[in-house]
Picture 1 (cartoon, rainbow, N blue to C red):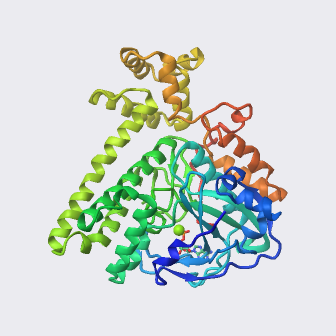
Picture 2: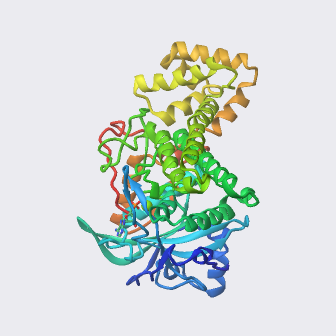
Picture 3: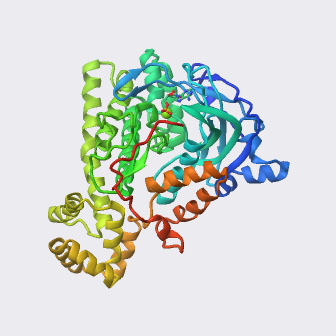
Length: 485
Ligand code: AMP
Ligand code: MG
């Protein structure tokens, strides 16, 4: 295990040095052994005969770690803030994983930094457990995401209305480059920094662009970032994820999900679902996420206008044309995703309609998104589910069955294919709340660990899976999330 600090070489306007706060009594609460092994952290700890709690709470520094708080700006709910930055996080450095990819290792809740703007820089145990469970569940679902290596309780209290136990999350991400990092330098008119940042982003995320130059490089870069966002949002829609705070400072260049603050899962299918208490206008509602990703990409594109062409009119035209590709690329990928969930091969518009009609039925009948697609998948191989689906959606099910038959693949093969896109279990909101409450009440991670066993196999029926499949009694109508981390 060798910590590197490549980000620091970009220059000192990209970050500010900041030392994590000393916790009074760091105790390991949740640990991700698989991730620790793939990063070489497990071997390092075994050699040193050290407990992870010290290193992953900020109490002790890993060898060669030079902790910093990253500088970035961002559009929050549409409004630009030229200086946000890591106000409660410390980048410890980078580690090379067993696939040779380099990952950022970051602590969150590790104390105030020069970017804290009056905030305490801390994190409660509840939001820390939530981030661990959500990110690990998303990773197992196959959605691009940051991971969580550890949650360590600090032994200190944090005040969030009431006193709550404090914790530090150790987050591992492909990088922490955000749309907001580019906006930070664009707002300062620092074209040179944008060029350097772009080269750095290419080296970490898009090495295939390394040999391109000039305007071609920049349009290639924008296209590559757009394409990751299209993929990401389609994956969110596939599993029913609502990010909740898609501000440009929470939008990664790598295309990973980060910042599991007020996120939640939909139960009843409704594109207007919004859970976040601070999203009164529903800007970040479930079905609006593709448009917001597009809007965020427009903010990124603006930062590149001076690099796309010397003539500003020409640059705007190039930017607009690149952005114009986004909606159609999204539509294409989305229909493909929906068809995979429905088991249909897209051979024409009528196939698209068939898939869309299913969503309309779920909407009209107020049905659970995950369980409906699960039942549809099982109906191909299980007569009980077949009867249930046939009576729930008499006309549609007949049309669908006929189309599946016509497309000529054996039912088991279609079911197997659908299963890869339709989880049997997701991190449902009411279970999340119950598990977090239990963890805090008992001061024990057991409830989280039992659930994680199931969430790590979201496409399989384990003996304890049925404990977590029930939709919430009220369809989550009154469920609210908060930006608590
Ligand atoms: P987020 O909601 O995580 O996207 O955070 C938005 C901005 O607020 C970032 O600059 C954070 O670092 C900052 N922030 C959020 N919570 C705190 C806190 N408790 N202390 C200091 N800064 C914070
Ligand atoms: Mg953030």
